[in-house]
Image (tube, rainbow, N blue to C red; front, side, top):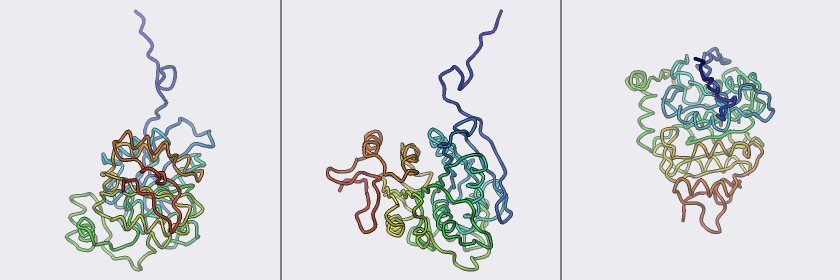
Length: 326
């Protein structure tokens, strides 16, 4: 009796191509080794418009954590995704420096995406990773060396989610806990045992430029800043300050119901970000119809009548595009 042939994915089954996950080790300029994960959307990069999103997680995240895995799975519907364990996290070497040396991790990942054939690379960071992608893009644009290493791989667009605008934020309980992890021996032990994070025991030898100090150097590279109104780590002061310092090329989304970083996303938000990437790369604001559809699908309020559509370009000195009803 003959066996019935089963169509394979991407051939005649009608199922879109889904490449296997590829794990790689990636060296940084300062000799750390990062664990990375590549989730291709296409089998071979031949399309000049193919996009790769380099994803940088928040403090205590990693590519094996369910929250980040859910983000990458959602993004993979739109673009290829290269995610990594930042230094001091997961299977990567080194120690966490809270956004300082992590710019070297981002630079290595952008360079790897270029090597794989992607001409369009977007950096997408969450919380600490959001600060890292902002600092990376700003410092790479200005040619400033970081700990003796020049950043060689500029992104084509930047998305920063739930990021702080400045250092040493202690005005919320979660951030006071993060400072305890960073500044005390018992906290560093607790972070290693409970969170799997290795934190550098030495304080910064010099305070590095904060995100708000370098974000203005990113232009004309397109920039999207995303923040939630239920963020318990960083108040809305932070995205407003970043958007004001970034200038008119930045877009700001203040998202109702969204908490903090990967673990706090509301349904549909990652899909919305992924769908917007082609427009962001082209320097265009989000289509108003897309924003209204997203609001309808998630049950969250769309922009009020007569108000600017969510995701529209944010001009310095004008009202930011808060998506909540007044």
